[in-house]
Image 1 (spheres, rainbow, N blue to C red):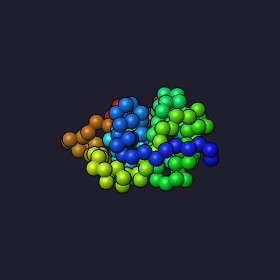
Image 2 (tube, rainbow, N blue to C red; image 1 turned 180 degrees about the horizontal axis):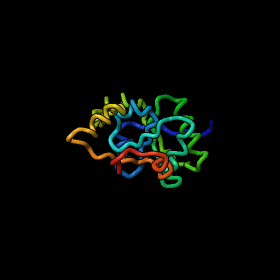
Image 3 (cartoon, rainbow, N blue to C red; image 1 turned 45 degrees about the vertical axis):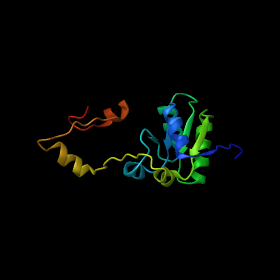
Image 4 (cartoon, rainbow, N blue to C red; image 1 turned 90 degrees about the vertical axis):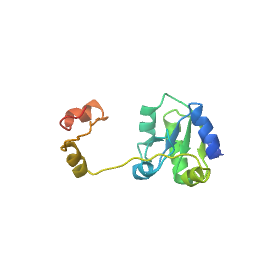
Length: 147
């Protein structure tokens, strides 16, 4: 491909994140929900990876990557370059297993089904629901009571 980015240690990734350089985690949303690097941004790898990264980050911002494998890493870099992001500083060598082996903290969150969401929002302790879709999606249909 011609574009080489270095493998970085978990500590190097953590240091870059503290310096304000985001970590784009291209793993599946299920894997990300189960366990991820605190502060990482999940942009699941598919043909829209670059588009979503471009929406979320300032133009040509420096980034680091966490990918499943070398093929996915090359695809992420190619998509980023196509939209003008040419400052990929590196990738987390060894992925989440390396992060865990370094003893660094992780986070997770619960994913629930639509049926479970309905059960929860119709209960006496109904949580607030924040709809983060864009206006076009909101206008096409939204959940009663969502903000």
